[in-house]
Length: 393
Image 1 (cartoon, rainbow, N blue to C red):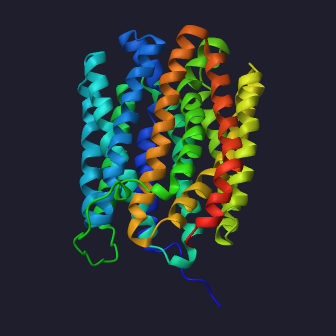
Image 2: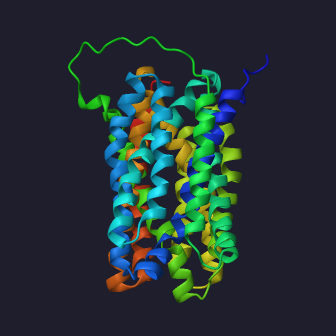
């Protein structure tokens, strides 16, 4: 019996939209600490606070985004969010002070958070239900390719334009505009909208059944938030690696891609807990390697290992959230995992910046490993059994 088609035109379009959104994001994220330091003279703790605003705003908007995509036409929500995401990139070009940049950066978190919720929900809508778990795994490849290409291209552009960071903002603006055009062309299955008759509850904004899973994913996001934000400035200041950030994220993306390609098959077969367990343990080794070895071997080796681990872990957790939710709460499920991820990343960026400023980068990276270790222990103690007992599909 032949399988239903996964890579249909609409899935390819939303996959590409997700790539362009994350590409425009990843093109500038790894170099923002350097930009703020060199352009505005920002200190490490100030950099942490400025960049945390983006995550906080995304965190605040995502629960409402889940409700919106579950309650209103998803294409309309997607296009409006995509338009705002595109437009605010112009603010980076106009910002002439650290305060102005911080304002635009913080506001930008809202449309980014909402767009990613809407896009991931649309991706689930346009694929056959029999291949949903597999689709989630492959959908994440768009993020991973963006992670590989964004930082690498950023280094090339920065050198080509003699250190002009605004060239990166122009490219991000263009990429997000192409994504907006694609959003307009997507055809989404129509749904019947029935007005809510029950009292609006918190469960419409956050998947209460998934609070244990939310704590776990926030721990892993905390670790990644520290690493991804401070890896470039750490490499430059302490290891003398000036052009290696692109290679770091490229190796991380290679690991993510390889593990997602193999992990998608396990998700299709329902081996969600196995994927999560394997991914977390592999990532834990990578974070330990990065914190313990202060040389290029630890720097680049950890990137590949963490990528291999996270490529199994994240889609497994996303599948958990989806499988714990009713069909009418797909948007809420997606917003819940993304909200939890944002909370972890935001705390990681903030606490990592404080650790780096007052105790050095090594303390920040050890903090990322310790929190990651806690997440692994918590998963085996509280999450795995809960998911297996309460999953709906």
